[in-house]
Length: 152
Image (cartoon, rainbow, N blue to C red; front, side, top):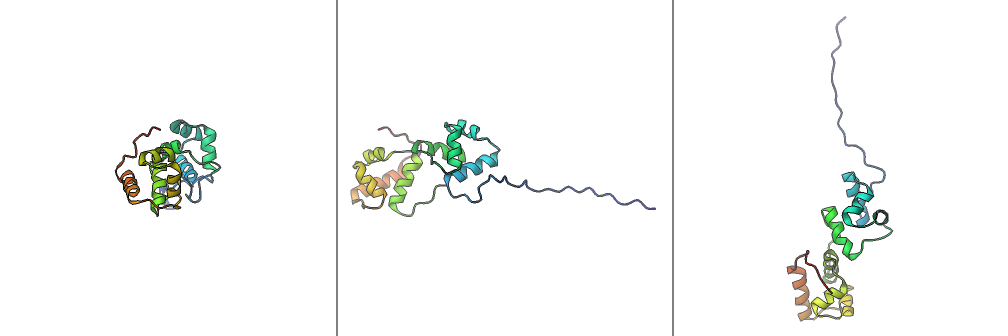
């Protein structure tokens, strides 16, 4: 009886994602969890990198809390990309850039020579800036380094 041929077969497939992996990446917490799982890290490891507690990471991932202004820059650095939604208007652009840079409303108002209440109204789209203010805002949006540190 003739010998049967022998075949060596190797199957390659990606390991299925954990059930903890977010189904869609909609929030900052979803992005944090996805990157953590992709990198095989524990919440405590990320907490050490970002400088927060493990409970804070847990709350972000469950979307029970959002990072504070100073924490957003560290979260974006950890992620390695910016998942914040694109701005559609000047008011959204000012708010988004302020968040990305970790600048408070008070700090930006001082830098732009505005009252904090006025800046708040500009960010909410309730008030439109005059030409001089618009020029200062555009300068802030277009020329300042995202890494600049602001002092009150």
